[in-house]
Every structure is written in structure tokens, then in C-alpha cells.
Image 1 (cartoon, rainbow, N blue to C red):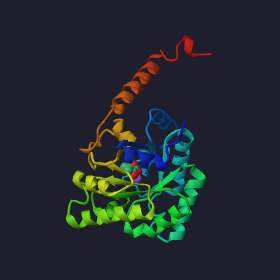
Image 2 (image 1 turned 90 degrees about the vertical axis):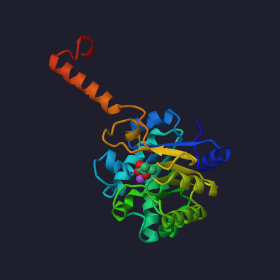
Image 3 (image 1 turned 45 degrees about the vertical axis):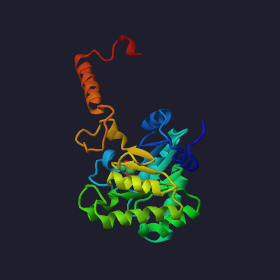
Image 4 (image 1 turned 60 degrees about the horizontal axis):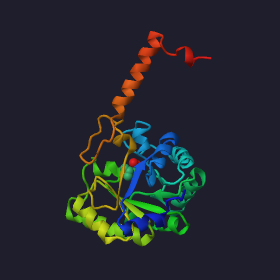
Length: 265
Ligand code: KIV
Ligand code: NA
């Protein structure tokens, strides 16, 4: 099997073939998604939310992220494994950002890193890219800045923020990023940005004009019951399926029908 590389993703944009990305936090799920043909497995810091139950992505550590990313990397035979650098590991001194990036690459086996932000972290992105690590940008609703934004609403609806997003996108491309995630921005803006760039854009809540799409796997599988934003398409109701399975198991154990004759030694 041939590994999906940054240049393969660029070629897909050139050909007009859309890129599929899903998040992944564990070995078993990642193996299924890889074999199903998902091109990029994003080890998102959304693990803080859906895996660990935190309200924001801020608490997750670099060690936590390395643990998740290494599990996903061991499962992925074809997909590119893209790992988020967590809050606080790359926004300060360039040397610190570089060290965090190197640790993630060495210790997890991920193939690329995603960092939130534009101009304000551009020097750190350049340093990481120049060291040979592929970097994916992330603009729009960047959840590590949730306390700056105040809520999880749509970003860049106003002209000033839209203009900054457009110049940030160009700056990220200029800095050597191989792709940019665009989260929760107006579809027309995401389309304009996607057309203006040579590198692919991957949207979440950013409309159909992006070069690819990403969703949080727990959300698209219907495991996160209460989370129903407009952009989310639920492909399965896993909450309901697991409820059925778990309650059948409870009933069988209580009835003494599990295990049966053929299920014992
Ligand atoms: O952590 C994450 O799941 C993400 C995606 C929503 C883009 O960054
Ligand atoms: Na993330």
C-alpha cells in the first residue's frame, strides 16, 4: 500500500479530487478508518473533549497527544497521520515550538503536525517546516483560542476578520504549510480562500468549496449525542447502537444466559 503524502494531497487538489479526513485517537478505530480509505487521520486535540471529557481543548498535554498519535500511527498503513500540537507548546519561543514538534515526530511516528493560527506564529511554523516536518495550518474557529472568542460561533463574518484570515492563509502557504484546515467560517469565504491557494484547504463547517472535509469521528458516528451543530452530518447512531448492545449484555449476564455452553472452557 502506498502512503498518502503531502504531495499526494497537493495532486488531489490539482486533479479536483476531494480529500477526506477524520479524527482518530486510538488504534482500533484508526485501523478501521485507514482500511475504509480515509486519506488523513487527524489526531486532534479534540481528544481533550471526546476522549477525556474536558470542556475545551486547552488541558490536553503534549504527552497525552503523543500517546494518542502513537496509537493511531501504529494502525495507519495508508493514511497520513496528522497530529495536533496542543495549546501552550508552540505559541511562545521558536526554540520551544521546535522542540515540541520534534518530540511529537520522534515519539509518536506521526507524519505531519497541525498548529492553530496565522501571522502570530509564522516564525515558529517556518522553523518547524525548515527542519523537515510537514505542517498543516488551522484558521477560523481555532478552539485553543476559545477564551479569546468567548463562544464556538462562526468566525470571520465581519470584513476585518475575513481580511485577516485571507492574509493569514497566504502567509501559511508562503511559510511552507502543505494544507490548511478552515473551521466554522462562511462558505463563500472558504471557497475564495481555497481558490486563492495552491495548497489544499480542509473544511469543517466551512462549506463545499474546500478541497477536502474533516469531521470529529465520534460526532459523525453519532456517539456524542448532544452535539448537533448545523454542519455535522451523522452517518450512524452509535450512541443508540452501543446502548442496545450494552443493555443486551446486562440482561444476558443477569439472566445467566451469558456465557453459554459453547462460550466456556
Ligand atoms: O482537534 C480536532 O478535532 C480538529 C478538527 C476539528 C479540525 O482540529
Ligand atoms: Na484540533
